[in-house]
Amino acid sequence: MRSSAFRRPVALVLAACALMSGAAFVAAPVATAQPACENKVSPPPPVDTSEQVAPGEKPPPPIEVPESPIGGQRLGECGLVLPPNAPVPPDGITAASWLLANLDNGAVLAAVDPHGRQRPASVIKVLLATVVAKELPPNATVAATQEDIDQECTCVGLRNGGEYTVEQMLQALVMASGNDVAHALARRLGGVPSAIRKMNALAAELGALDTRAVTPSGLDAPGTSTSAYDVALIFREAMKYPDFAKAVTLQRIDFPAPDGNGTVPVVNDNRLLAAYPGALGGKSGFTDDAQHTYVGAAERNGKRLVVVLLRGQQQPTRMTEQAASLLDYGFALEPSASSVPVGRLVEGAPQAKKKTTEARPTPTSAAVGEVANSTPDGTQPSAMQTAFGNVGGPITAVAALGLVLGLLLYLRNRRAKAARAARAGAQQS
Image 1 (cartoon, rainbow, N blue to C red):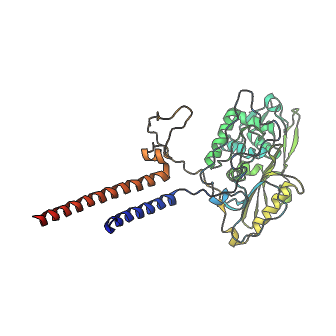
Image 2 (cartoon, rainbow, N blue to C red; image 1 turned 180 degrees about the vertical axis):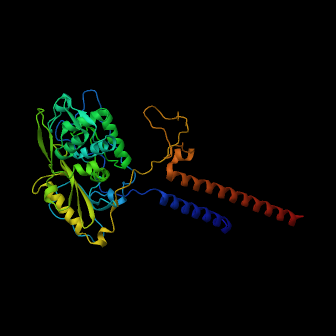
Image 3 (tube, rainbow, N blue to C red; image 1 turned 90 degrees about the horizontal axis):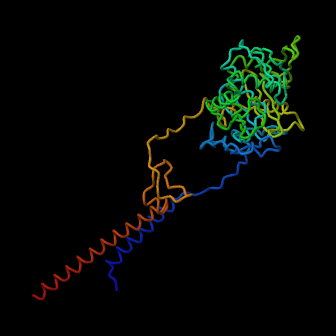
């Protein structure tokens, strides 16, 4: 029979092992089920062939999803996002994604799937117009070419060789959504590829990280992407430029006629401008893949709001009427609701994490087709991490503790036997 002195250390070892093992399993990450966001990574599949890549080419990869939603955690939700105790938004909103925000302080008042990735259609012209207003003087000239004229329309009607001011073209761009004008302005910015780079650079600078412009006009193309949040962010920036803010409020301008004789009227296609009191202008768009899109703003009692709707339908009510009902809703929000925003339109992109430039040796233990082990910060894992992972490490530590305690127990027993032998020898002598 084992003595109580032997049983106590064994019990201590077992208790320590149980405690450490329990801690190890508690420390293991627990996966929690999250609702699936259908358009978190990419817009819905195209409905036609407009996004097919050329033979031998690969489609652009999806845009990386930020670790944390830009503008606040709640803006990463896919469903209806409201402040506490806010009333339910009006019925009849057909947009798959929409957002309502304060144009001045950036407070997001309400939204549905604000970071859901959709296609912008001609709403992307707001981004092009912002680059134009930022880089080109309004009195600079642009000479039209046949390539501009041959763009898939809607078109304002340019004349091959005709010269236009940047101001005229900017106004025609946002008022009548001229694809011919968009192409001409893109050339004036250094060529279409250069203009696209500038548009995407500005989007990234603003924090519009769901956005990738592929065409200057918003025509569907592989990799095109934006979100309701991004469109609000871009429109807010555009309204800081007087040339843009003026252009979106104009009801009509006289534009040089395509035949070179006189002028023709260009009328603003934003129905909200004439129909909604306090309207500050906006931009609409449509393609088969994007469906109907809209961004617009209005002012009431010193408060300026912006509304964005993406992937909407014109039935049973027009998109501009849906926008009007959401603006009414925003203006009517009680101070207690509107003062607790669900997020913010950021003032510039969040600071990117610094990446080390220190050279690291490439692990040679990985077989062909395998990914070598590495930790999240890019360093190589310890032998314990490699062999056992996050949970196995603590368990291995428990085993090591058991071995140490066992060794102590063994040494203690040997000392006890030696002491007994010494006492027995003393008694015999």
